[in-house]
Structures are given as C-alpha cells and as structure tokens.
Length: 137
Image (cartoon, rainbow, N blue to C red; front, top):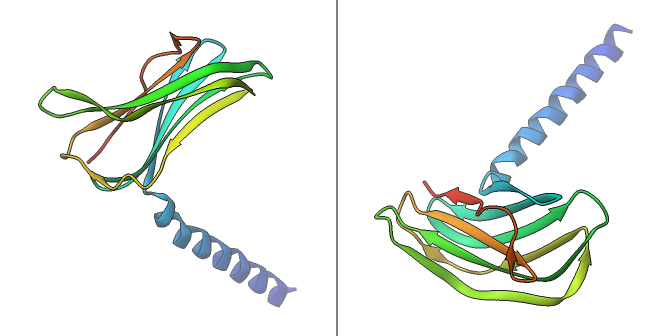
C-alpha cells in the first residue's frame, strides 16, 4: 500500500513537472477582450517581446447567433501617441455560427516597447464592442 502511494505521488509530480515545463512555450501568446452585444470581441497576439509573429481577432456570441457580413482590422498605438493601421482590413460576406474570426500570420514586425496592438471588429459596418488591445513589453 505504501509503495502504491509513493508511485502515485511520483506520477503526480512527474505530470505536474511536464505540464509546467510546457507552459513557457505558450506564454508568448497574450489576449485582450472587450464586451460586445450578446458576446465578446478578443484579440490574441503571439510575440517574443516586441516582435509580433501573429495577430488574431475573434467575435464570439454566447449562443448559436450568426456573425454575418463581418470585417476586422488591427491598429498599432505607439507610445508617442500616434496610431497606424497594420495590414489590410479583412472581410467576409458570409455568415458564421457563434464565432467569426480573422488571423494575420507570419507578420515579423518589430514594434517599440509599450506599443499597444488593438483590434476592431465590424458586423454589417457596425463596430462590435470596444477595441481590445494587448500591450507589448
């Protein structure tokens, strides 16, 4: 019985070590969200410090509601107060059930420390929620 408990404890410790060892690889993604009608709008940024590899924006509804005729764009808000659209605006004229999203991959942009990357999401030309942002440090 005592041996079974020590083996079980070793397995639990081994599992927790392997889980915590995998965590730093996922720590490069950062998310910001804001409330929107019947759901949320979120941005997710994959970066190493201030070098951005990927940007995603999603519009999630809390039900099976449709997200139709939607578009999105990302904006950089620099520490000096200036702003700039990054990458062309993306659009879809179709509908998605419960969730609409866009992803900009292989960006490779270097931004100044303190830059905030924000996302704007529109359905039928109406902005959904605020502009969620992620600050690069």
